[in-house]
Each structure stands twice: as structure tokens, then as C-alpha cells.
Length: 349
Image (cartoon, rainbow, N blue to C red; front, top):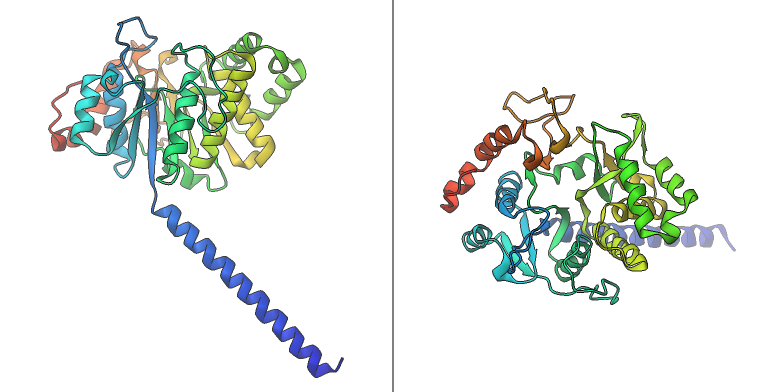
């Protein structure tokens, strides 16, 4: 082969490689643009049982969850999951009538729509939430980019949670730690639930692997996730929710979901890499208020803050705090008042 021919072939190969690279870059930009056009959303379960049987949490806090979330994340939606739209609390129904971002989504299935995996009974268990959330995400996966899955009645927001994804660009999902006041409680509760789940999920070797992966180098303790809130890219959250459902279905244990969440977090990191999952310790970006007896770090605006004086993203179980319930109410009233005025919603904390 002559040198001229070799040079010609080399130029053609280089040209083809550049063309393929440009095509790939263009496809990536189109995909990125398509993703950026999608909104974010928070999903929560909230309904009053028609027979008035006692629920673990009342539903009075659902309104303030929604109002505070939309106040700090105004370009997002809220999906309120309930077996019957009429079972949603009246103040939430009123909110949905006045604000198109609040969407009441009827969720009646006790199994995953794509696989049939799910709960054999028709009871309203804690683990049913993952089935409803997974099915809702399947239904709305072309609409949203980032999603948060939160408790309905006992969470309020001080900051936009999706800003945390900007800080953790390698992460697919973010979890939040349990019991910052008692570092051993997270593991103790997890292992207690593992005994109820049983089978391979209660094997000592697996539990130790989970425990080892959960060590936080900065906080210097093993951080177990609280089931009250998790978030991330929609595809990742959907995969995690389905994993939780599978664990519950394997054992028939749907009564609690916290152990399942920690297993799903572990399995996801094993599959996708440790950097794909972030878990903030309690008091770093959130606080489990029911166990806080002395909190003395606040921003100059009066928001609960971490030891770096960054405002906490959300407050969990504030309804159990006899020390700070009134102060939380003052903060959330201030955050939500402009939105309540705009929508002419006359509720008071």
C-alpha cells in the first residue's frame, strides 16, 4: 500500500471517528435538553380512612408538607397518592383545586403493574407505599426528571431538596439518616425488622456487609437511612422502590418498610457503584425532630441548620417534638404565607 493511500485511509478513518463522536455528542445534548424540559416532583401518600380507624399519623400535616414543599420548590409538582380521590383530606383537595401543581392520584393496586409482584392481602400496610409510588412513577416517567418520596403527615421543608442533586452530581439517589442522637438505634431497628423479614435477609454475613457499607467517614458512624424521605433520578428511585417491593413480597412482610429501604440502598450501590448513592447523617441535611431535645444552630433567618450553618432541607417527625413544635410552626408559617396568600388558602398552623 502506497504512503498516499495509507494517508487517505487514515484521514477517512479520522473523519468517520469525528463524525461518530459529533453524532454521539449531539444525541447526548438532545437527551440532556429533553431531560431538562421535565419537571421534578414529590410523591406522598395521604388519605383519611373512611371507617375512621386509627392511623399511625393523622393527616393534618399533609397540607403543610405540600405548602412548604411548593414554597421552596415552586417549579415542581406534588403527587398525592390515595386509594380514592375523595379520601384525600379536605384541605388537600382544596389545595389541588386552587393549584394545578398538586395532583391527587388514585392508587388502588396492591401489585406492581409491570410484574404483578406485590402484597397478597388488601390491607393498607406501610409497605404498600412502594407499590403505589413505583406504579405512579411508571405512569409519569416521561414527565419528571428528579423525584422525592416522602412521608405525608410529618415532614416540612425549609429548602428545595433537588438542590442536593446539584451538589452530588455523581449520585443517582440520596437517603437521609436515622436517629442522630443515638447512633446505634438505626442498626438495632434495622436488625429487629430483619428478624421479622427472615430468610436470606436475616443472615449474619449479609447484615455485616450492609453495616460495613454504611460507615460514614466524616461523621464516624454507620448511617442507616430513615424511611421518611428519599430522592433522586426517577429511574433510580423507581428501581429502588421495586427492589423494596420485591423484598417485602419475598417474605410477605409489608408492615414496615425501613429495613427494605436500607437493603435496597445497599444493593443499588453494589450494582451501580458506591458513588451512585449518598446518605446524609441525621442533623446534616435533615433532622429527626422527635428525638431532638436541644437544638442551638440556626441561620440568621431563623431556620434550623447544621453545624456548618447550612439550613436543613427538611424536618421530620416535628409533630413528636414537644420542644420545637411551636418554633417549627413559626418557621413554616413564614415560608408558606406568600403561597397561601396567592392561592387564597386561609389555613393557619
